[in-house]
Image 1 (cartoon, chains in turn red, brown):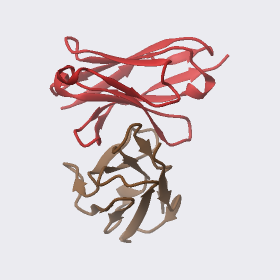
Image 2 (cartoon, helix red, strand yellow):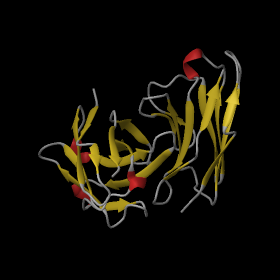
Image 3 (spheres, chains in turn yellow, blue):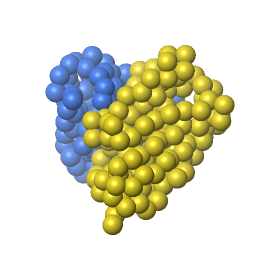
Image 4 (cartoon, chains in turn yellow, green):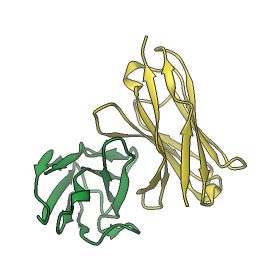
Length: 120
Length: 106
């Protein structure tokens, strides 16, 4: 069974940093494209970014609001993907979901989400 | 960025009804359109990918159609478990973008 378990969320002040982790199991992690998607309270879904598999260079893409502040990385030896968030803003407050993306871009599996609150 | 517009924003229906939700892209996205269902406090669930491919394990009452800029999600006969919020997503061009959601209510 595919499982994605996020951790690392919490309360942080504006301008602060946080690193989210997502542990994966039940599939071949090294072959997967991994994405992060967030959802602000009471709002819709917002794509944050993705990381391709190492065999494709492990390259990353980001949404404009987070580009330059957020970094996605992966450790295939630990079956874990990370989201490093720096210079956090109040608008970054959301539940952050780790996910697996299929070759067509559909998000086939989601973690349970971890909440991030940016507040002074 | 490609804008995705869903309609309606909310919809009232009854068990057994046939329901259609539409999603329009601001430019052509070929068939790179996915549909999700989300229930309160839960992560979304993929229903349809590539515009009309049913994700494994999803009931056959869900179907998708369309290409280019106009897409539809159809539920042929609503079941009690289907009352939720539905989102479309384009994966044609980075950044992926989602529609604003359609809340399906009794």
